[in-house]
Amino acid sequence: MTSPDASSRSTCSGEPLSECQVSRPRGRRTGGVQPASRAALALVLCGGLAFGACAGAESPPPPGEPIVVQIWHQKDAAERDFLQDWATNYNGRQDSVEVEVLYKETEELRNHYVFAAIGEKGPDLIFGPADNMGTLGITETIRPLNDLVPQPFLDGFSEDGRVMYDGQIYGLADQIGNHLTFVYNPALLPEPPHTLEELAALGSTLTKDLDGDGDPDQYALVWNYTEPFFFVPFLTSFGGWVMDDAGNPTLDTPETVAAIQYVLDLRDRYNVIPREADYETAKALFRDDFAAATIDGPWSWGGYSDAGVDVQLAPLPLNEQTGLYARPMAAPKAYSVNPAVPGWKLPAVIGVLMMLTGDEIQTQMANELATIPVRTAVRESGVMEANPVLQQSLRQIEKSLPTPTDPQMRQIWDAMRGPYQLVMNGQVSAQEGARLMQEQAEKRIADTFLN
View 1 (cartoon, rainbow, N blue to C red):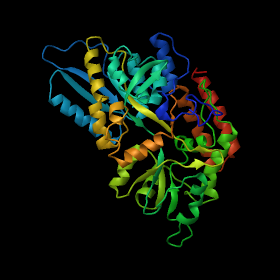
View 2 (spheres, rainbow, N blue to C red):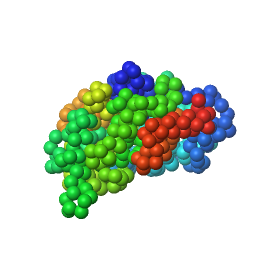
View 3 (cartoon, rainbow, N blue to C red):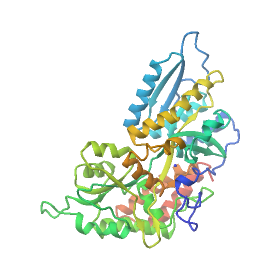
View 4 (cartoon, one colour):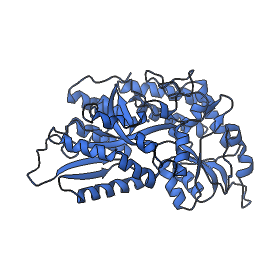
């Protein structure tokens, strides 16, 4: 939702995301276990319990009443409005199917959905990033689509639009992305850095004390550098990765240490970035022209443009020492079907799924939201060439790596965060931080029975 070269820990042999399938999880399947056992596994994976509207116990509606298809999703604000407008228009032009959409935050969405689906409840469709597929697959709360969706329609997707789990298609995407890229303001930075060395040099010219109080007021770069997801591009640029082919964490390595040290040097040696910066602080500094560049994702570009920033995108820089680009994770965002959907309702649900992932809506989304389509016909149409932001975004996608769909990924993220932030706070060394990441990841995975 996978390594820069053959010497790294890879699930796609270092191929760009556009040339390989989303990584298939290798966590242990539940193998048709009873709902009580699935619920126990879900509890340790998701850490919450909630039930939603009943899906499996519904009966067909009375004659003249529409079939209600419910969707839970975690789309960002602009996409959320787009989906709601589409549902409203769709409901208004026919009366046989009524689409209801409900927004939930990403963590809430996954946790609530898993427990609802185990109880044969919840929405008919769930939409979210592909890295959810491991958790949803291992708890058997989504169903394969290979035999539900017509083969010609499936064939119309690029490989990254068909989200795989255990060798079968479990999700159909309406976009590929969720990736970081280098975002810069050409008024302050006419030419983006092409290498990590050039990026480090920006501190000497673009980090400035404008009011003479001894503290910088403008920075060369700001980004949420204390969050592991935003650290991954630098990890990959030094040849590191988060897990091996078996889903085991690979964090206590010289590559991890070197990447952490580079981020520390950007702050402490080269004065490129602020002493402290969470996501909201970084966003505000770039938006208000107090930073020449940031590292951010597609969810942010529209807001920066609306604030008057002439947003330009560039691939994250190359590490000249290793010959590897700083490659972020990227993932499709896809719809999956609840196994609790009864047979009488399934045709309506699949029909809505095909509309929401078809050529027409992906073309509209590309035009209006600058999302990267995963329908081959749309990607090959003029919609890509007509939008410079889409072209710039696609260049970064081509230098990205698939987000693992392994259920272990959630435990690895959580394990990385604390030790990494201890390093950034000066409480432990980079070497000790890498060791603690590995230790905590192994413990968390063992505690969730995934090893």
